[in-house]
Length: 114
Image (cartoon, rainbow, N blue to C red; front, side):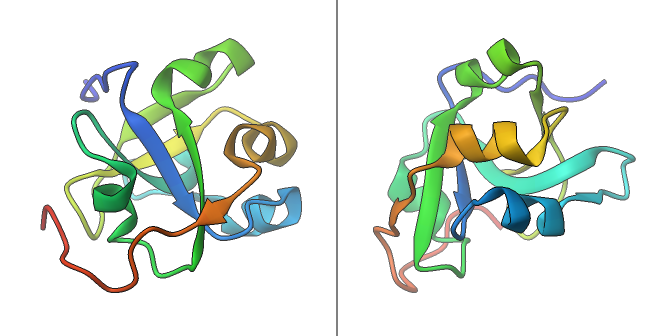
Protein backbone atom coordinates (compact mmCIF):
# COMPACT_ATOMS: atom_id res chain seq x y z
CA UNK A 1 0.00 0.00 0.00
CA UNK A 2 1.30 3.46 -0.90
CA UNK A 3 2.37 5.81 1.87
CA UNK A 4 -0.36 8.31 2.73
CA UNK A 5 0.79 11.91 2.30
CA UNK A 6 -0.78 14.47 4.62
CA UNK A 7 -3.27 16.92 3.07
CA UNK A 8 -1.23 19.86 4.35
CA UNK A 9 1.92 18.74 2.51
CA UNK A 10 3.17 21.05 -0.22
CA UNK A 11 3.46 19.77 -3.79
CA UNK A 12 6.25 21.43 -5.81
CA UNK A 13 7.06 20.93 -9.50
CA UNK A 14 9.72 22.71 -11.50
CA UNK A 15 9.29 24.40 -14.87
CA UNK A 16 6.62 26.50 -16.52
CA UNK A 17 3.92 23.91 -15.79
CA UNK A 18 1.95 24.72 -18.92
CA UNK A 19 -0.24 21.87 -20.27
CA UNK A 20 2.22 21.07 -23.06
CA UNK A 21 5.08 20.84 -20.52
CA UNK A 22 3.07 18.56 -18.24
CA UNK A 23 1.99 16.35 -21.13
CA UNK A 24 5.64 15.99 -22.16
CA UNK A 25 6.63 15.28 -18.54
CA UNK A 26 4.02 12.59 -17.96
CA UNK A 27 5.37 9.07 -17.68
CA UNK A 28 4.96 5.80 -15.85
CA UNK A 29 7.09 5.29 -12.74
CA UNK A 30 8.61 1.80 -12.29
CA UNK A 31 5.97 1.25 -9.56
CA UNK A 32 3.28 1.52 -12.25
CA UNK A 33 1.99 4.97 -11.24
CA UNK A 34 1.45 7.26 -14.24
CA UNK A 35 1.73 11.01 -13.84
CA UNK A 36 4.32 13.73 -13.40
CA UNK A 37 7.11 13.70 -10.81
CA UNK A 38 6.86 16.23 -7.99
CA UNK A 39 8.51 16.92 -4.66
CA UNK A 40 6.11 16.54 -1.75
CA UNK A 41 6.49 16.01 1.99
CA UNK A 42 4.80 17.05 5.20
CA UNK A 43 6.77 19.52 7.26
CA UNK A 44 9.12 20.67 4.48
CA UNK A 45 9.09 24.20 3.11
CA UNK A 46 8.95 25.26 -0.52
CA UNK A 47 12.63 26.15 -0.27
CA UNK A 48 13.54 22.69 1.03
CA UNK A 49 11.44 20.87 -1.57
CA UNK A 50 12.69 23.03 -4.45
CA UNK A 51 16.32 22.21 -3.60
CA UNK A 52 15.84 19.02 -5.64
CA UNK A 53 14.49 20.86 -8.68
CA UNK A 54 16.87 22.04 -11.44
CA UNK A 55 14.46 24.63 -12.89
CA UNK A 56 14.49 28.34 -12.03
CA UNK A 57 10.72 28.51 -11.59
CA UNK A 58 8.30 26.27 -9.74
CA UNK A 59 4.61 25.64 -9.30
CA UNK A 60 3.23 24.99 -5.83
CA UNK A 61 -0.03 23.53 -4.51
CA UNK A 62 -1.06 21.33 -1.59
CA UNK A 63 -2.01 17.67 -1.47
CA UNK A 64 -5.50 18.74 -0.29
CA UNK A 65 -6.15 20.62 -3.55
CA UNK A 66 -5.54 17.58 -5.77
CA UNK A 67 -8.46 15.21 -4.90
CA UNK A 68 -11.02 17.96 -5.51
CA UNK A 69 -10.02 17.73 -9.18
CA UNK A 70 -10.05 13.92 -9.20
CA UNK A 71 -6.33 13.30 -8.81
CA UNK A 72 -3.92 12.03 -6.19
CA UNK A 73 -0.33 12.44 -5.02
CA UNK A 74 1.39 9.09 -4.55
CA UNK A 75 4.79 8.60 -2.86
CA UNK A 76 7.21 7.14 -5.42
CA UNK A 77 10.95 6.62 -5.33
CA UNK A 78 13.35 9.01 -7.02
CA UNK A 79 16.29 11.31 -6.47
CA UNK A 80 14.99 12.37 -3.04
CA UNK A 81 12.94 11.01 -0.15
CA UNK A 82 10.30 13.63 -0.95
CA UNK A 83 9.71 12.37 -4.50
CA UNK A 84 6.09 11.66 -5.41
CA UNK A 85 3.91 11.43 -8.51
CA UNK A 86 0.95 13.70 -9.27
CA UNK A 87 -1.53 11.38 -10.99
CA UNK A 88 -5.09 11.10 -12.26
CA UNK A 89 -5.35 14.58 -13.82
CA UNK A 90 -5.17 15.94 -17.34
CA UNK A 91 -2.28 18.25 -18.23
CA UNK A 92 -4.74 21.16 -18.17
CA UNK A 93 -5.95 20.26 -14.66
CA UNK A 94 -2.38 19.88 -13.38
CA UNK A 95 -1.45 23.22 -14.93
CA UNK A 96 -4.35 24.95 -13.17
CA UNK A 97 -3.06 23.63 -9.83
CA UNK A 98 0.61 24.48 -10.48
CA UNK A 99 0.20 27.89 -12.14
CA UNK A 100 1.08 30.64 -11.97
CA UNK A 101 4.66 29.65 -11.30
CA UNK A 102 7.01 31.54 -9.00
CA UNK A 103 10.75 32.05 -8.93
CA UNK A 104 12.55 29.17 -7.24
CA UNK A 105 13.66 30.32 -3.76
CA UNK A 106 16.91 28.32 -3.93
CA UNK A 107 19.61 28.13 -6.58
CA UNK A 108 21.80 25.16 -5.81
CA UNK A 109 21.69 25.34 -1.99
CA UNK A 110 21.77 22.34 0.28
CA UNK A 111 19.76 19.25 -0.50
CA UNK A 112 17.52 17.57 2.04
CA UNK A 113 16.65 13.89 2.02
CA UNK A 114 18.73 11.58 -0.03
